[in-house]
Amino acid sequence: MSRTERLFDILQILRRHRRPVSGAVLAGETRISLRTLYRDIATLQSMGAEIEGEPGMGYVLRPGFLLPPLMFSPQEIEALALGLKWAGQRTDGPMGRAARDAMAKIGAVLPAELRFRFEDDALVVVPNWQPREREDLPLIRQALSEERKLALDYADQKGARTERVVWPVNVGFFDSTRVLTAWCELRNAYRHFRIDRILGASMLPERTPKRRHQMVKEWRKTLLTKTDSGER
Image (cartoon, rainbow, N blue to C red; front, side):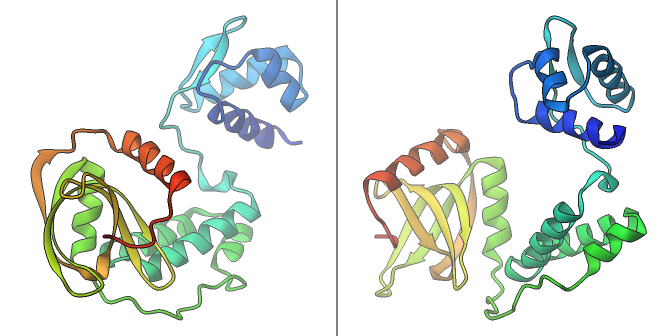
């Protein structure tokens, strides 16, 4: 294993743990001595990695440190390319443009051998479904990010319209549709709303009473107790 690969592995191990990891564990997983590990930690810190800790106390990596693209393996490059191609074709306009811009930025800084792997069309996203452009989807993504309530004008599968105030949880991108998961104040429960049945949406000034990560946990628990294939 080269030193570059070893530094990458140390960062990956630290990323997997939220609590401090002892030097002995890091040295054991990377098969190096403690003295070498301490030198590697110092090198990573000099590169900008915010690794906190000291010998005997353990180490933890603070969020926010990004590896340069040249540190990606060929398989990781293929995964990135495939995911960005999918996002470029199957999401809304702004998200699609962001995915294509990200591909251009990554491709511009990759070394030649990885750039070829990144731009290769060995793995493609087949455009078997062309979604109708939805102006509501960027607004819904903004509400998710800011943890704000949404007011929806919604039509069910029979065409009956209702006005809803919901707390957005996530958006699922399926092959043939997109679905908003949200806590519905009208139903007092988690519900699924097909994006193509939303006739109008507006973001309200009120924050959701619960944090989104908490609602995600609650929603997942409901999936263990019932099957809900559509909004009611």
